[in-house]
Length: 213
Ligand SMILES: Nc1nc2c(ncn2[C@@H]2O[C@H](COP(=O)(O)OP(=O)(O)O)[C@@H](O)[C@H]2O)c(=O)[nH]1
Ligand SMILES: [Mg+2]
Image (tube, rainbow, N blue to C red; front, side, top):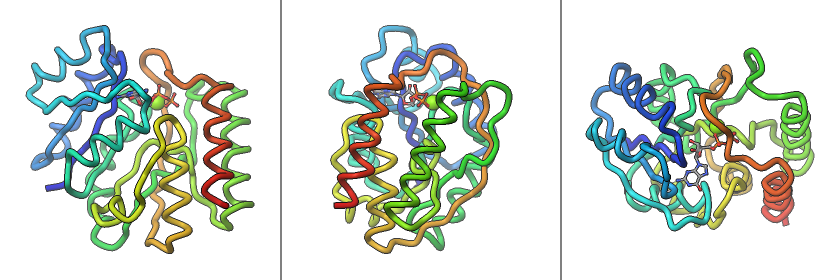
């Protein structure tokens, strides 16, 4: 059964609504929350809603996702719990796994102030650099994806932090895996972002370069 992975770090403001919405839209789905030792009520809320909860080792979103992939032992879909991604499209992502190894939610529209100007610039630079280095136009930072189990195994992922989506995208392109994009709208976040522009921006830049070499 496809496993829906939800990485969380202090997301009590949105975790409940996100799980409720997933349950309304997709039945027959195993939901696993991978938590970064939240100090708020995130884990308590997730457990009340009867989903599996595992914990990362405190190294970041990348390490959290890698742990969850190992734990899931199956095809996966993952997305932020912060209300930015269109949960209603999860079934479409799962269907696309029939034909493709990697399904990327390509952010084509940003509503309201979902990304401040400076983030939009960073995002455009990242996508431009990805195109330049890998000759493919794919949203290397999108946090909504589906991946086949065999593709995860082939990739031997190693990122601990926010370079994980770039690593997945870069390796999928370089390994010639089947990639498809589903256009999505990126909405404003509930709660605070854990992305630190300078530090995590450098991590993404490092991943863009490292997986090209
Ligand atoms: N388990 C775990 N989840 C994390 C960690 N850092 C961020 N997340 C979660 O990963 C998702 C992406 O982080 P977010 O703050 O939304 O970054 P942004 O989308 O770039 O603004 C969110 O659901 C976060 O709660 C971490 O260290 N461990
Ligand atoms: Mg987010």
